[in-house]
Length: 315
Image 1 (cartoon, rainbow, N blue to C red):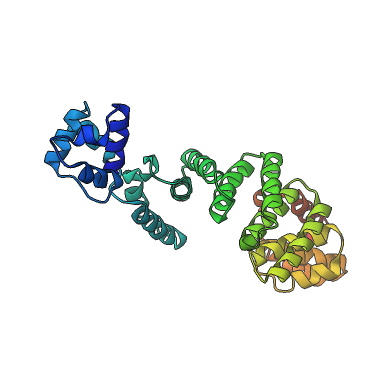
Image 2 (tube, rainbow, N blue to C red):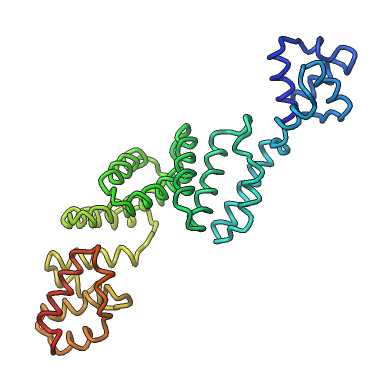
């Protein structure tokens, strides 16, 4: 805000309020300007800038991004968060042009939330480089406060990016450290599930299926105790895959009973095959798309597919 800039520049010039205000305005009025209670006229700004040894343009350029007070900036952030939550990113470029995050007066929490909005926008636009830059800046600002849901959202953007790059071990370190910190926080129940789900997926990628089973059981217990649900369908698919690995066909049958996805269809075929119900298995296998490209990053499912193809693919 302009009042704060006047105060900072006055201090740099070693001037008291009386010295700066003398012959221009009253000291009381200058005090109100510096507090942001009143806005000075252009004529007053010109005279103050002369005494502060800076041009009016210099003073105005420094304050061009401070048109709203903290409450107004906060309200605007909340408005844009609501829009983005409903998959509307159309207002974000205008928000970015205001450059609120560069304001000296802005809190680290609000600054972090702005960078998180920018990261989500760039993710939506498919700009991975800008997305990760903004996510890192968001984490840097939000880490100055108690971990909250905004920090978790920024972290998940970063870890998803790292997983795509194959840096799963680094991701696990980040996620497990954060999970340990937020576990005692009752207000972050959904955040716990979000992070734990990503941890399970990481261990699945590392083919540590027994660890997956242990963490899935922990996840289900956490859902039950907190009465919060998150990604139930995705967890069901992971649970079915692990059940297939463990040859737990009783659990597998329950999980694939309502086969809605290609993965569940393949797992249902596997369950039928292992139970000797070959005719049913063949019929289901015929409906499965014979595209192994989608399985190349999933060794467990690729092995299941190849086994079925070898045993019943010609029937």
